[in-house]
Each structure stands twice: as structure tokens, then as C-alpha cells.
Amino acid sequence: MDVIEELTQILEQRKTADPKTSYVASLFAAGLDRILKKVAEEAGETLIAAKNAGAGAPKRDDALIGEVADLWFHTMVMLVHLDQRPAWVLDELARRQGVSGHAEKAGRASQND
Image (cartoon, rainbow, N blue to C red):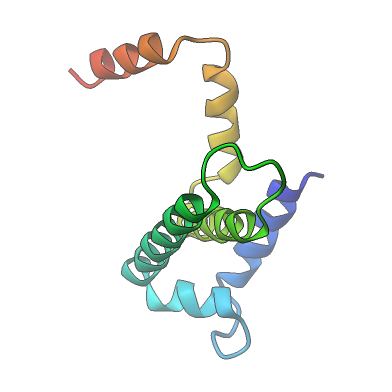
């Protein structure tokens, strides 16, 4: 089992856990607005870390990696809260692989008509 599936299972379990004993359970208990605020907060922190890292950094930037991990984690919490499977995001990325970004975006636009 991969880390995404393992983490998804843990997040699912936290939906019914005591909010006093689990950070994730406390997010679920607080509701979607609180989860979305955390995603937005982590996105902002990721942008700042990316700006501080600069382009062409020759080595791993632990601050940036940590912020992206926080963003991905909280995004997974959001997906699970909405009964979506994080693995579906990976499936969508795999589907898009090898497809021109312009062509993929145009395909999405025609689906929304």
C-alpha cells in the first residue's frame, strides 16, 4: 500500500475520532470552512517558501518541502471530508500524462459548455 492510500485510511478513521485526541478529528468536527481556511493558509505559506527558495536552487529546500507537505496533507483532509478519494487526483494526473496542457485545458472548457 502506498503512502497516499495509508494516509487516506487514517484520515477516514479520524472522521469519527474524538476531536480532543486528534488534530484531524478536530478539523473534521469544525467543518468544511475550517478545513478550507487551513488549505488556504498552507497554500499561502507554500507560496512564501517558494519565493524564498528562488529558482534553480541546487539542493533540497526543507522549508519548501515541508510547506508543500502541509498543503498536500490539508488538501487530503479536505478531499476526505468531502467523501472524495485522494487517489482519484493521482488517477486524473495519470490520465493527463502525455497530453498537451493546452489540449487538456481546451477539453475541460468544452466539457463545461
